[in-house]
Image (cartoon, rainbow over all chains, first blue to last red; front, side):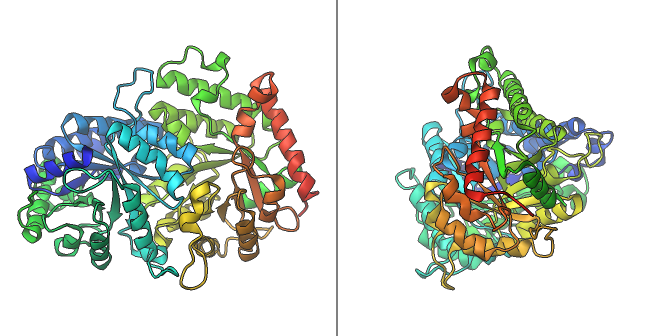
Length: 303
Length: 303
């Protein structure tokens, strides 16, 4: 079960972190970006960069989160780089989270589910998989029938989703922190929906196939959600560049140091600009420092 | 200004409809689907089908809505077919709505904005456009800073967005119809946010660059929203296959018959299965019948 597999990798590596491959072309060092002019050339350079990052962290980081927006900005060639990046990360043993925040009515959501959470076959022409992801982020604004195709694909193909609950951005409270007439906030309501959508799918460590996105930048909300959503695994963006610290995101974890994984994108990908040296070596150092930072507040992670 | 251009096309054609190119490979007639095995072959067949549909309706329908999920399900080759379909529709003079329901934090939303709402240049290697859309659907759950990159791109490049407000699917009320402590429903709150995001960008007919998705299947909510959101143009899904009738969606329009465009996907694309004959001729007939049906409740559309 994929959430158990993620949890076991986190325990084995003593590292609840995820490297975000939000690879803007502009992030590449000159030795990779020089000469790339067309979308095809830029996409190829992005994939080369991603492979080197993956090689540098595959033995110490359990997962990567690949943010599809950066690839869509390079058109179809960018999407091919997204697909190739997901497949390469899988081949190197990493768990792959596709960060696409997809959402639609049922018949259309089924298409997204097939694209991101389909069975992992090669492109042999049958019901072939477009993108080799283990998890997909989704937006639950449309309610249960927009989510059901994703949870069905999760059950069929051993995958998971993360529902946007309390996002890391400054404006997230405009809607998410509004009070409902029943006393809950909108984010608590969305969290309750995520918990319900995962009902019955909890694995060996108590967490279901339906997780929640909870920003590191909102520790008070994270504390409320951690207490409220017993079976919901948290994907935690916002560490580093967005201002979230290890102390702030402690609230996302349970007493074992489980139940959450923390993403860092720019802090890893752009580490070479601060630290100097080769970009992949700098990324590994930054990932190592992040691991130490998280463990300093979590202590040892255990089952 | 793009919303004015859309409005003027609607008046000139006396037709407030939009053909949804939600082209599942399974929708294709045997003469197009036979022999297509790989994703590349399927994507090519989908594009051939779309071109024929566009050719059949370009002189009588002002806009197409291209639902990207159906293309993502075919991987990078599908995305190329999506891109080609948008470009072909533009060349045939249609207004193109990319239905992608994108949403993210600001730095990432900027990537989506560049992908869908960038300046319309060919792929010459500069800041090239990935997908040639005039409008993009977006999800506002993240609040203002997740929407700002889209509205900025709209202002720079004369584009528009439609924010999901009250969606057409059966479960949409689970979150959207909840009452807030301030007395509004969540969908009214989202509608107010959309109206505010469009503030100051209204064109000659009173409608701004920021529209709203309002399902044909919810006439009571549409009535409330039409009265509430004076400058917000509605994209109305749910007519036909989802159960929305012309009478039900009358509430989406203002007294001039303006302020809304109604989408129909399966009812047009699959018309050949009910009507017989060539798929493109059947699509044209179905589009013509839909126009008559809408005008029978709207009367003449005028400025």
